[in-house]
Image 1 (cartoon, one colour):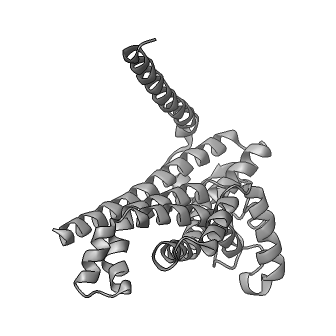
Image 2: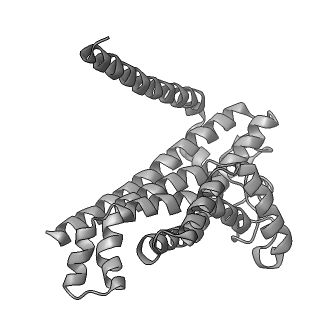
Length: 283
């Protein structure tokens, strides 16, 4: 097989692989859309569940999901970005850096149910006086631990992608290290950091196993983060596993897809805005 033929075979294989992924995605989303579109309505989105979740809406679950995701990001994003900043800007490659990277990679490989057991032991039992025991706060903090490795690694890669010459130019103009990080490194790495946050949002809002021990089906809107409440994933799990209502379950699944798409769109919007501002500042 000559070089020209090899290139054609490789391109055909790559094209088939890409189309296969797209086809699987559309099949999954299309099936959820077809099965769940009959349930979708304004009342389904804004009403509370009725008749033991067989009727009514899923508004409390939407609110619970958003609360849990924002708690997870509020906890994980500053720590993850700060850790990435430490190992890229303040610490040369050495033992500590290797320990942090190895720990991050190991955490990223831990099954989600293990994070659930960890959160149950730490937040529900040991710190129950501060978290309220089984609560949205406990669930959000557990998800924060789970998405932390993703944010660390993506933020590190993003900060290392900022050119060394730009740092030297900043130092040459008399800027301190913190000023260089604030005005050069962080703005230049915003697109990569935003990508990590998007991945974190997608993983956090779509997980059930880590938080199934900490939330409970609640037909009312949560009164506070220290109280119990359900999320879209836990409600979907109970609806499907208990066979309560597959129609409502598919409607919940379709709503979950829309919520993820909306949150990703919002994050990408801010990502583009920061990128444009940084580009104008450099010019």
